[in-house]
Amino acid sequence: MARKISFLNYKGGVGKTSLIVNLASCLALEGKRVLLFDFDTQSNASIWLLRLDRWNQINSSGEGAVYSIFNPGNATIADCLVRDVIESKDGEKLIPGLDLVPTTFNLVDLESDLESGNPEQPPYSIFHEQLEELEDQYDFILFDCPPNILRASQCGVYSSNEIYVPSNPDALSLVGFTLLVEKLQKFHRASASFRKSGMGVPAEIRGIIFNSIKGNVDIEVPKIRMQLRMNQFRSQRKVSPQAKIFNTQIRDANIVRRAVTLGLPVVLVGDQRREADSVVTDYQNLARELIEHEPN
Ligand SMILES: Nc1ncnc2c1ncn2[C@@H]1O[C@H](COP(=O)(O)OP(=O)(O)OP(=O)(O)O)[C@@H](O)[C@H]1O
Ligand SMILES: [Mg+2]
Image (cartoon, rainbow, N blue to C red; front, side):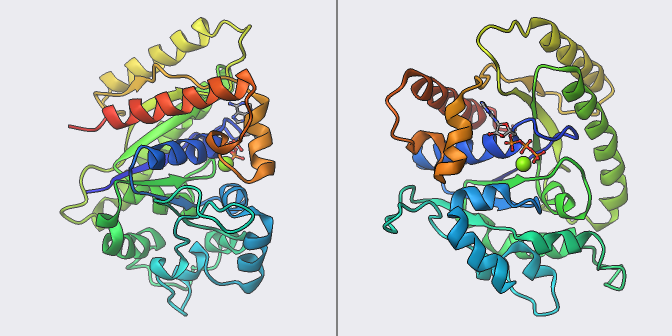
């Protein structure tokens, strides 16, 4: 069965999208079958992986993106799947096994336009039913979420069993983590009556991943604060008993910002500079640590 994982923090800009795109690429290069859902209307992961031209076509057609599956036209997830999404400029498939369900700007309408929809079946439940159809084609299904648990994010959270919290070593990330725990509990209570057998545990927080760590900055104090907060939540059973701060942390590297412009994950940026090599190692180590941190 696929491991279904959301990346979430109520603090924006901590690196959720950068982590998920680079991690998904490393997992696929390790031979895993990976499906990435973009649930953020900003469409950052989609534009990054499809590049602007291909994404523009989908955005202007109004079809082939995740919002379509909530429309009366009833597209399915399979209709929106972009298989082996990463291509060279000549159309060569660069990472076989990494598929994307993209989003476009119309996803924002999901937050407001379903008042007249069926209250018996919220969007996350519609989504989950469809996901079940193709789950066993994958080892990992990853959800890139915006910094909230509104309707779009709820689809990822409801279908996930695991949540990882990208964080920067600062007070605001700690606040974002704390708020996430509170909102997650609330969502689980609200969605409990829709859960069916066979879905596994409701998504639980299993780890914090520190991102954008500058070489000359000591992060021991923010790390200890995060650990203390996590210990507290663990004793209150608000996070998984196995929740941990990941040993792997991702360094701050300009190449990560540049990779977005190039439309490639960092691992494919042919850059011999030291910085690129070392941040690639970080993402590869993170992929291995995630594989090992499988729920038992
Ligand atoms: N390791 C890193 N080194 C350098 N820059 C990074 C790194 N990780 C992320 N960034 C940069 O930080 C910015 C925010 O990253 P990203 O978009 O991944 O965050 P996010 O949490 O997904 O944001 P949002 O909440 O808007 O979805 C981007 O400009 C990205 O290129
Ligand atoms: Mg993002």
